[in-house]
Image (cartoon, rainbow, N blue to C red; front, side, top):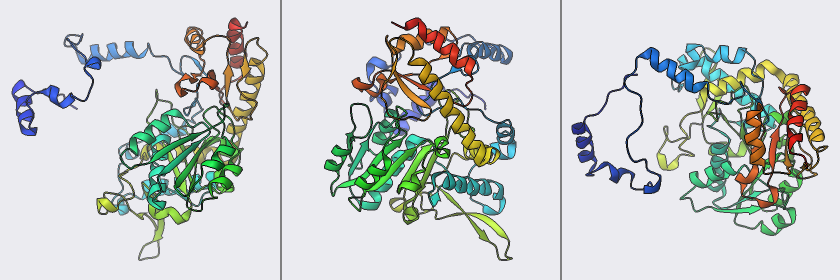
Length: 448
């Protein structure tokens, strides 16, 4: 794509056209303290070869899972991706595909969407799933909007510890809808069931729980469901860890109304933070308010099977004020990656991935707690992510770990919860005993 610069005259013409006299008027909402002032320290004009060489130099300065052993999690995990996944999605007919409006020429894309939906239903034990959204955070925001659209109630209760970034996205996307957000949890970050019972009332639109929660601990989802549905109008929304559903109870088994989650662990690279894949599934009775797109299987006039987009209640197909959502596409390429990953791994492969992660995490947690000054933040069960109380500031460990070849985890001060400050560690199926033992040896330097 060529770069075509604008002249001063071009810029003046554009400003005049939109009715402002100066560029600063366009960015007046940005605080002056954070605006860049002065000249950019840019290189002089470079050739294509010189630019490529310079960018490679910058890229080699990056710290990643290619250079360090990763124990970071918090919704993005260093998992093994079979070679068939990138080999397939790199094919031009998939990489360049976008919106399958013309079903007769989009059968491959639509079939992949249909198979993706079917496998998400199988994993979550929910009857309906769409063909993906953008990420877990946007999926949760859409779930809250869907609950409000269904029951016209305004209170959303976050119970236990939900990923703080997800909550911020929900508050941003739902701004203007008049929703009230409530937060209920114990000192250890898990759900406070007694307070939840007291808080449920006739204006509760939805109760949201993350399973496992942000700190990796399992919640009493069966009891939370009972409390939520004590108000028949309230929806029970579960933010599920999709990979773990092979070894823990899926949300459909405990009567979830809506299930959302992050699909990054299903064959999608970390990519320094995204883009990722949003999971969204629900009960069949809410299908008319389901955001995003759904692919259905039908037959043509000759009786041959074919795939089509169905129930297209989004803003591009109907009157905007009647649309369920302004989501007008899906993460098609990453939906395809997840489909290939799940089909390649199969039921037993997915179970093996989750179980190996579980075993590795519990081995590492046990070894870390043998170190003086280190302890698990709670005694609640966990799957493959756990919070460790450390004898020094977690950020000191994280910074020093980089110099020793480790991405040590997440400093949980980002949650703003003083009771649960520590180092959040995630362990996947990729970690071996030598890597985990080396990490423990590194942590022992901080023992007291």
